[in-house]
Image (cartoon, rainbow, N blue to C red; front, side):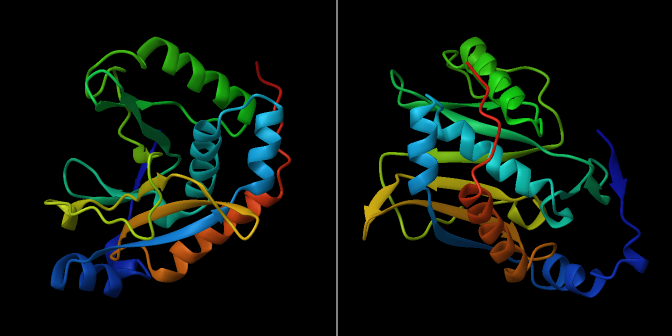
Length: 219
């Protein structure tokens, strides 16, 4: 996958990047509730798991917008990945720890779902931090805390000032006023992503969930 370097001098975001990357390094998080009432009913009827479905939704929206694919390479150059793959946590009950597994993204949900199931079957029970080898550089993290709901979630990254990719965390879904809501926290670097971009991400996730028309032809 290609990493396309940005010419900082001609970049329209140059003053914002300099302000929030160099002058006042700043990351922030926003938490919102997604209405998954209809989605949850539909995928349960088709025996589809919620976690990979949401991983697919998140990754699809991430791949629509450059601000969520902007990163630094090993030499500190700013650039944009052509496409991102999700790296997600899998809980290990015995040790009460987790493993990080990555799956190659595919716009075809059925193909992505099949790849997810294969990765979980092959690597899900290996009690290592990163059991699947050859993790790609164009990955971003997704995690889930399905044991509790929350109204806010923030990661305090020691080296967060140089980490530009988004981080997504989902909580336990709950019922409120007849709707089933899923909390999701989006953590981003202000150098590449403003409140407008995060709000658009949340809105497009909800729109995608509402327009449930993914081909669910999976086993």
